[in-house]
Each structure stands twice: as C-alpha cells, then as structure tokens.
Length: 115
Image (cartoon, rainbow, N blue to C red):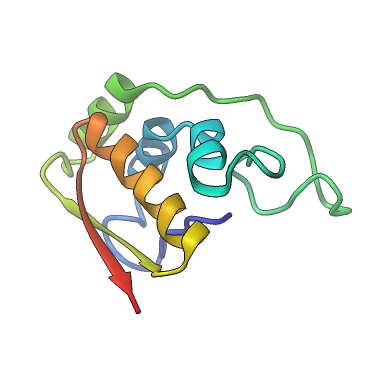
C-alpha cells in the first residue's frame, strides 16, 4: 500500500509538509482498515525489507498535534490535500483510512474516488 505526494508540486516540495502527513497517519491502522491486516506495516521510505537498499529507520509514531504544528510552520495549515484512489475494495478502503486519520489530525482532505 503506497500513498505518495508529488514533491515537484507545492506544498509537497516542503519536507515539513511531507513529515506532517506522515505524522498524521498510523500505518498499522491503514493496514488493518484498508487491507484487513494482511501484510506488513509500512515504514515510510522508498524500499521494503527485502530490497537490497533497505535500511531500518527509527519508527515514527502518529502524532496529530505535531503534524498540525508542522503544517502551520510551513504556512500550509489551511491547505486542502486531495487523496485520490480507484473504487476497488482495498484501494478505496486504504484511502478512506488515510483520509479519516488526516481529518482527525485537523488536516483538510478532499477524497476523490475514480471508477
């Protein structure tokens, strides 16, 4: 399961914004709600454990207050993020789980579900 931002576009070119989104979401909850807890919890970097370039990073716990503070520091507290998925079981469920956690953290999210 992957949720990506395009770092070539504002505001995702700002590391604070990307970190805020990471802090707003608990990957374990995403796996549980989006994919029925089948699989391994994501670690928020570009490769998984079986990849030769994998390097274990420190775990980052969900911290909605810090997420909101980082967005404010970046001047993006009122920005509305669009989360787009297709309308298939785990794709939609995963997107919904991510969007719900972002909203719980006070982050504005527009959900778009494509047929």
